Length: 111
Length: 254
Image (tube, rainbow over the protein chains, first blue to last red):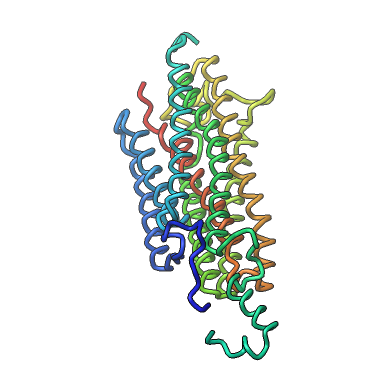
C-alpha cells in the first residue's frame, strides 16, 4: 500500500523527475543574452559586406536557442516536448524553403 | 496490512487509500494518472500553441525576406531611419523582463509567494517600459509622415541632404515610394509583437492578482510556467525583429 506503483502508461522515467532551474542558471542565461545583444549591435557598425546579415542572424538564432533551452526549460523536458519543439521549427524551415524556391524560380528580378 | 487505522476504521481507511492513490493537489484532474503527466500534457499543449505563433510570425518574416530582396535600396535607406540606441535599449529591457519572468517561475516552484509577486510586477514593469519606448519610436514616425498611406512623405528619401542626412544617397521617386513597403512591414511586425506584449501584460495583471492570493505557491505552477513560455516566445520574436529591422541594413551592398 505504501509503495505506490508507477502508472502503466508512464514508460519514460524522465517524466517522474521534475527539474527546477536555479536563479544562478537563469543569471548565466541573462548574461549570455546581454553579451549577445552587445555583440550584435557592435557587429552592425562594421562593414563586413554580405556577412553582416549572416552574423546578425547567427547571433539572434544563438540567443533564441539559449532562451528556448533554458528560459523555456526545453533542455530539461521529456523527449516528447523536445520532439514537438524541433518538429515545429523543422516544419517552419520546410515552409520557408518551399515558398522561397517557388519565388526564386519564377521571374526573379523581373519586377 | 501495516495500517492499524484501517482495521479500526474501515471507512476512513478507504478515504486514506483514495488520498494516497491520487495527488493531494486540488487542481490535479482525475483524467491524468500523475501530476507529472498532467504537467507534461499542459506543456505540450502550450508548445503546440506557440508553434502556430511561430508560423504566424514566420509569415511576416518571410514577407520581409522577400520584399527586402525585391526593393533592396528602399529597404536599406528606410531601415536606417530607425534608431539603433532605442532598439538596443528595448532589447535589453525585454531580456530583463524575460529574466524576471524566469525568476518568477522559480519562485512559484519553490513556493515563495512574495518573490513571485515581486517578479511578476517587475516583468509587467519592464514590459510597459518596452511599450513606452515603442511609443516614442512610433511617434517619431508619425511626425515625419513615415506611416504608409496617403500622407506618406518621401522627401527625406528623395532629397536626404535637405533633411541634414549626409550619409545616404538620394533615391529615385519610384524607389523612394517603395520605402512604404518597408514601413508597412515594420509596423505590421513590431505592431503584432506589441499586441502580443499588451495581451501578455493584461494576463500578467490577472496572474499577479492570483499570485498575491496565493494560488500558485502551493504546488500549482502550471499557469505561471505556461505564461512564462508565452512571454519568452514574445522575447524571441523581438530577438529576431531587432537585427532584421534595425541592424542588417547599415552597410548596403550596392
